[in-house]
Length: 247
Image 1 (cartoon, rainbow, N blue to C red):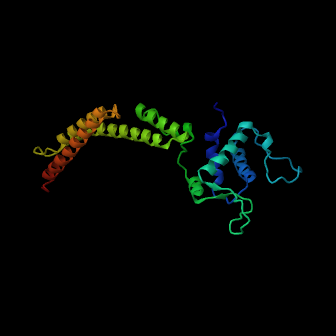
Image 2: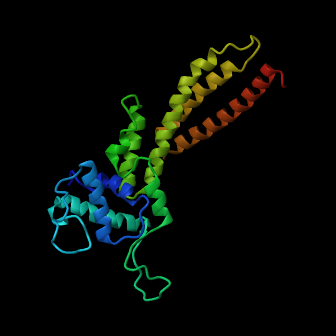
Image 3: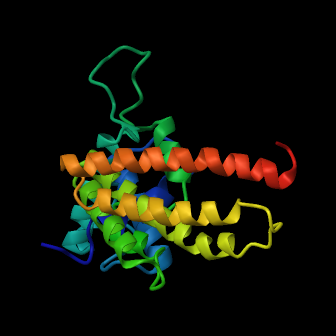
């Protein structure tokens, strides 16, 4: 069941709250997030503990916060631990390892905190990068990649991103064809036409092969596409050298 205040919602605030800070307890971790939420006016029930209530080790009144926010903060803490962004105190009395009961931010965690790229866990925030002009197929594959990433199926996510990238390359090839065919090259040059035709041919053959990637016919088509592309590359290189007088 989705909620307004969940892990994807709170992670950007968690990442910002970790920047430049040292070791911390869970209470300090939650305090840092609540301070940022109060600063930007986000969330519900974000308030400090009344003055004179005695020392508790934390500044904000966690009980007053919305239940889903408290749950999201807890989930975010375990998210950081699971991804090795923080290390909990070790169960040891050895002076070399004792950290005073404080969680330590790893180098991996510092790199994550200092990063400003959109978080893939924040689906809505990540998809804002791709406006209405983005190809529908590319958007669909990226959307599926985010869903699989969020659920931890990273291989499937990589496959989806690969498919989106392939479609984007096809679109780029299609947009290059007119310019390459109409290019004003010397009359005796055979560079422009073979290049444009090869792009079209490879685009059609690759699309046919991509339609059913698990079939043996698809694999045969992919092999033929690769052979045609290699043959075109060889012919184009010779044409280019002739056109430039370097052959």
